[in-house]
Image (tube, rainbow, N blue to C red; front, top):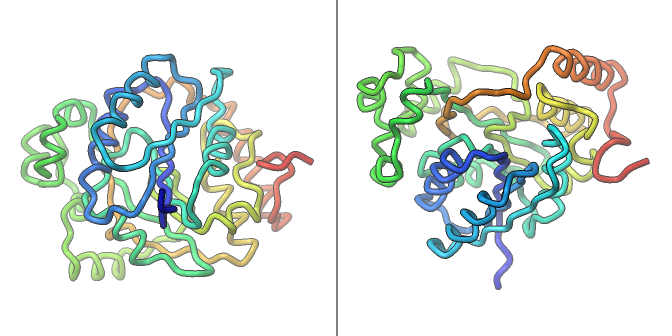
Length: 273
């Protein structure tokens, strides 16, 4: 098989309904030269069965990377997924994020040596998230602001990012600048750069492990480029039982050390030292 030009890593854990919506979104992409790596942090066998069935419905290569459930180990499974990628360029998102049809196209359009990209996501309420069907994704209803408002999405200036056109996205990116950080829902970079900083710090639990990776990339000299109104995904709502103050505090301390020490390489990543 021809080696793909890009790899899309999708993290998941026992959330088949949301994962299916995400995968349907990737089957609708305008740009097709990519593979999908599913980073599965210990889901039950039903997730594997679903993925095996879904593979038969698409010509996109899907690789399922799994390890046993031993608590929140997202950083570890993402590192394993990185090693499974067959391309030089990696796009990362989550299994609760529906990509707009030009999601991959935008990452490919803006990718550049010496940079990583930080895209945008739009958080939907639970009622709206549940209202989106596979056919709504295929027909692009879920990226129609009026359609979403009728199904419970609150009115907000941020709604502009959902269906912004080429001229509008450039203007909005310009007037709403934000610090580009590695955003686990929507970010991309060169595999060699991510390996150079040794991937994700596996000590980190929920809360900021993606940002910490980005900070090491910046310390390495890789610049962040913000495309929050260009590459868009819809973030579906769901309970987050793994979120707690203890893990957030621990992760904050690791991030603070990375910044103060200007760390490039973590000894707790892909290569253990």
